[in-house]
Image 1 (cartoon, rainbow, N blue to C red):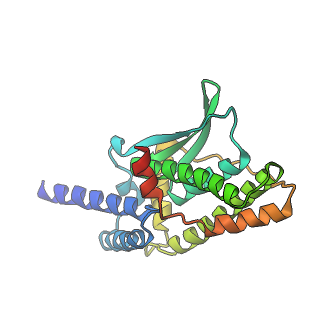
Image 2 (cartoon, rainbow, N blue to C red):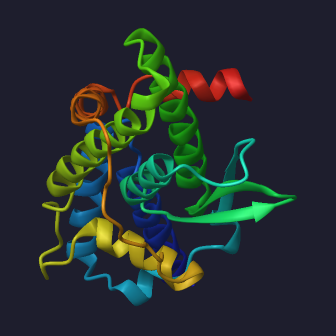
Image 3 (cartoon, one colour):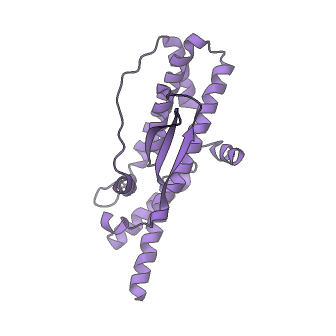
Length: 225
């Protein structure tokens, strides 16, 4: 009986570490947590089947609503990148004639994703005002901003995916498999990026690449709750 309890404590510890490894607000702590989880997985020879037993209340969804009848393409692309960054799924839904994004996964990750999307939506509006982006240039600038954010996320995930177990499985992949087993795989459409103003697109891209994906998210969450 004691051995079983110790095993359950071990699984809980590893799951918590994997959860921390997906925390975009603390990349250093996330890397430490991922290394610790890897060490435990290797030491105790844990498999995906061992880890696929979290309590149901660990999972959930968080919604980001906005007063529009459809989602701007640039915002949808950022929502997908945030989902990748936080090991979540994201879906575009409609309710009462308005669109909203619903993040699915571990509850802590979905909350982080929601506030990141709110934050990046606000910060993009703010940058447009600072740069005095004209209405005709706005879509091109925002698409560029989304591209800059995507390039940041791609670089972050490339580093994070280097942390693997001895059998070559990325810890991020292991965590993502838990989400997919509960919610299914995220469906992502692929479309060309069409923009009318190349200068505005380039300026937006640089803004997206330089916008922090870590700072201010916690402050935004405290202000909005």
